[in-house]
Length: 261
Image (tube, rainbow, N blue to C red; front, side, top):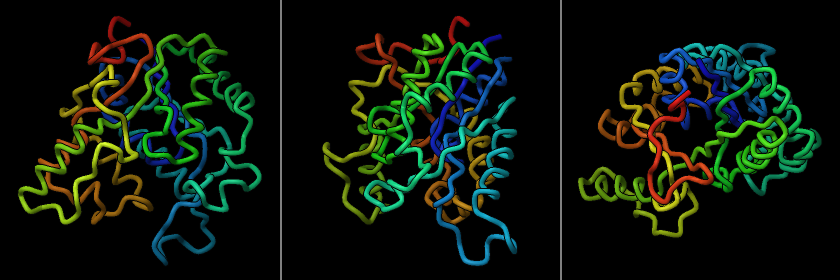
């Protein structure tokens, strides 16, 4: 048995980008640990959704634990930073936000967990955080440094396959299911297929991923992009989880984050 630590910026990020590999690892007998940098304090929520006196972060913490149970995580930890909001928002620079945190300090908080768990594998995000969110970019920076401090050798950067996404959008456009234009090669989401080194087939866990998403009801509504799309579209979008590992490639050289452990 090995230990997978998966590090994320906010509640709900885990099920979207790594839910399949988490459940797969757990089902194969590995220990799965979820670490979240913030409690998602500045997420949006419909009026009247929260109970009287309930703070959004309280709801999101409970949702994270519920989703973690679905995904097979044996331990959930929050690093204690505040959600920074989208890039360019005034909240980016508020005291205590993850974006303003010292990388060294935050990395040591994560490294403590990596050492406690004798982590074999760590997932973080790519250098653009997938889509440019400041907290996601900080996950990349903090995660890389924490792995150095703790001696965690196998680090996978979760990303999106930009070419795969564009192909799916083009097919949907041709079928009349997409009303906006397919983005060109310069759009700022994910990475080109040429730099991705790991592709994990998680189609067997699509129902699990959707169940975990539903656990985050404050952020992922039933009529959201994630849950409202037909099964075929959901499978295309979420049936493979993509990663970059330095020293691997070119091309896809790994299909299992826990291989050989």
